[in-house]
Image (cartoon, rainbow, N blue to C red; front, side, top):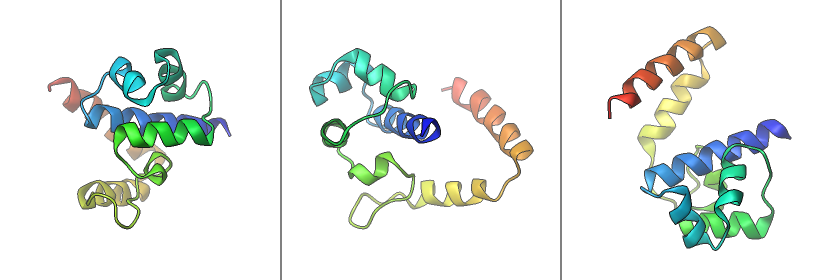
Length: 110
């Protein structure tokens, strides 16, 4: 369960950043506390269906997108993301570690 909470939180954070929102802004838009957003994003707590619904509405995504990087039918086209995820899925843990380090370096330059 902890792994699911962490993955859920990571996807919430990724969608929040993609939307250009701070945790404060997402909390206000979703009608949740900043503490709740922080705890969800770090995987420290799970989210019940009403919270998931508020988050998905505030982030303007299908709720399923908060559980998987795969795009549900009818959602925004994210072919590039799906392609990257598919490629990463075939890598070894060692190679994934290397890619993670590479991404960390690349994203710091933004």
